[in-house]
Image 1: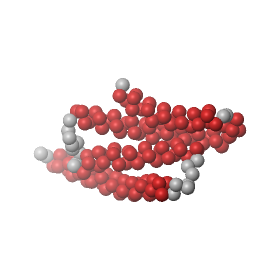
Image 2: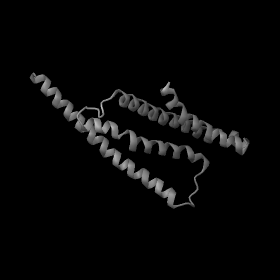
Image 3: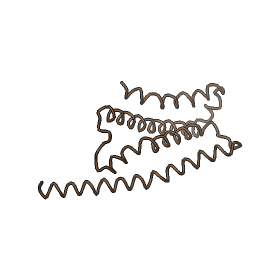
Image 4: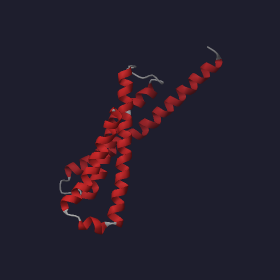
Length: 156
């Protein structure tokens, strides 16, 4: 092994260690704050969750799932110095599908929340003129589509 190869390995090792440290430094507070928010709504049953906040709550749940189930996989990769465990084709394929699905779900949910906020602020009269059933469908159907479409798309 030449000197260049050794220095490259050391550089990768330092980079992996730094990435691992950064991820763990942000993952722990993220999990703690999410649990605090869930506990708040669980203990305070009198706190109403308004219809226009359901989409934000769904985004919070998806982000919590991503931080607790998806983020440990790259963290383990960085902790092991760039080695995937278990190093099987099935695991790598599943990991890619899972990560892409969660990332796209997060993106779609943020897009829908932006559109929903726009409708609530600039077109509130339009929403008031809709019946309660249509308003509920306008809030629930896009959330369900945002949650179902990406995993199905990446399966195909």
